Length: 103
Image (cartoon, rainbow, N blue to C red; front, side):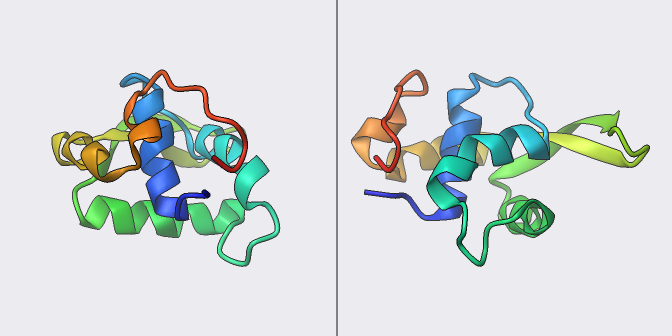
């Protein structure tokens, strides 16, 4: 079973154990499952993050300058986002789970 993209973003941030992740780090964690899908490309990731931020599930928690000189944020789960983990399938609720591709 493949999770919807935004649920998988939630899972990747949960699995990071609280470590803030860049857009590229999150994208790299998703590419094996979603590559080739219309909604999935590096440019559209910020739109997904805006939606998740609007619902208070993630937040920009650490600013940095990327390799092109652009100001960016690293993302992490909010308290509300951590509460939403219970809605993921049981195999995804353990942040340390090492799931096979497409699981």
